[in-house]
Amino acid sequence: MTDIIIFSSSVCSLALFIVGLGLSVRRHGQSGIIQAMKQVFIGITCSGVLFLLVVFHNMPRVDLFIILMIYLVLFWALAFAYIIGIFGLPLTSLRIQILLTVYNSPFHRIREEDLMKKYSLSTMVEQRIFRLETSGEIIKKGKVFFIKSTRSYFVLHNKFLIYLTKIFKPISRS
Picture 1 (cartoon, rainbow, N blue to C red):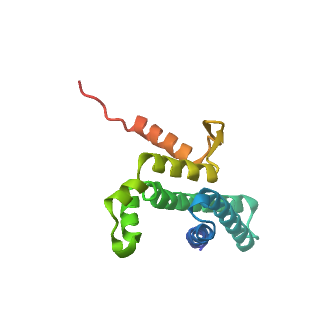
Picture 2: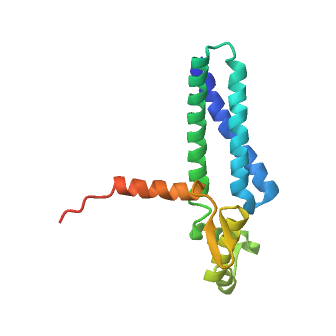
Picture 3: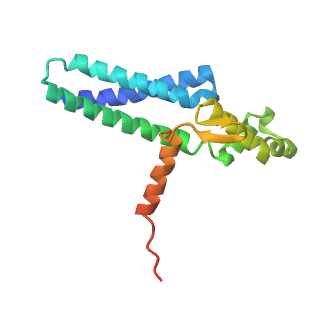
């Protein structure tokens, strides 16, 4: 019974995370998505822990600690998988962005000149820099950009991919 409650709590927390993130993004827009993700994630994590503390208040502390750790690992793994799946590729894929632009245009059509204007290199770089600045991922001092934190989701994601590449690098047969 305990396993079912822990698993259900993790899945429910993920559902609340998805709903909370959707509402937060709808309210604040795409530019605040990273901050929204952090706030919703922390809020749902704390809510889940409090729920389990209430449900299992009579258990010995060691058992309660193990239950909380299992919940946290499950919820964080589910949330991480959701974040990677939803925000990892689709939002950054230029092909997907172009398709969405054409789809969202009147009658699902757009002139080539308008598309080229929207996706010119300078426009794309300006938009990405704006998103990174408003989300707090980078800071601009003068004409130089700095990464705010090496614990950023995107930096950690990149470090993880580099680590995986080193581990699973194909052996060259010369």
